[in-house]
Image (cartoon, rainbow over all chains, first blue to last red):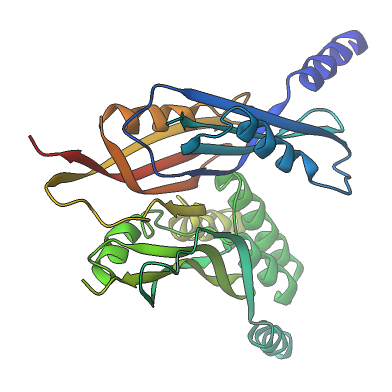
Length: 100
Length: 141
Length: 110
């Protein structure tokens, strides 16, 4: 019985539940040939943290993939995945890069 | 009765404003004069489980207290899910914001958009608000 | 017995008042930057998607991308004045997350 409970706990701690915090979309261009995406995340133990630097990291990652170009149609998702005592916070952004 | 009056007074005095989400867009002051526009939609909201909890506290006998607790637990079960503020009874109240923005600025040349999700709360009762403030660019031609 | 009936009646009343509740988490608008070009045709488009969550077990947020794809599929041109609404409808031991995306499809007239 205790083995079964342990297996269940192990399974649920590995398969985290996702919560969408926010989503936003910007103006979408007609030229959608070059889709780029970037992601950044951090891990929190018991939900404790002193910074939100992963958000800037996501923006920098996206910018670096479209240097000298124009980024439009940006879809941004901010989500949190809860594992056992541990949380994964993520910002996932994608958009269309247009270089003249 | 005294308990009920005290509770009501606390709730009325405790009227608060709450902000859940703010986002600011680009501000373009180069194209012409900016006229402020604003669209605000709100919906009455009530946390029924909290009302039942208040009932539990004001109830004078143990049977009524126990009943309120049962109702509170039942409501918590039937209204499960993530929430921002108090739950509302109609989720379509913010669907026509786009049309309302265009009515106030038919040219569609809008800048400095502030997307705000906020509320005025009075204990378990609140007005859940979605507000879009922006500037309409009067280009002159 | 009397207490049970009273609780059932009160619960039904509260259910009628408190059942089927919703929560609008956020509304975002964007893409109003320029004047609509003359000689172009415009059309309101919208896309919705949902995700039913039972007991809180949910392992992805792909329904956001679903709504996004549906919006894109409706327009080959620019999509301006985009608004995104994220809400939840509550239920008994489950809930439904909803995404609504709206925009104005702008295409040069033939």
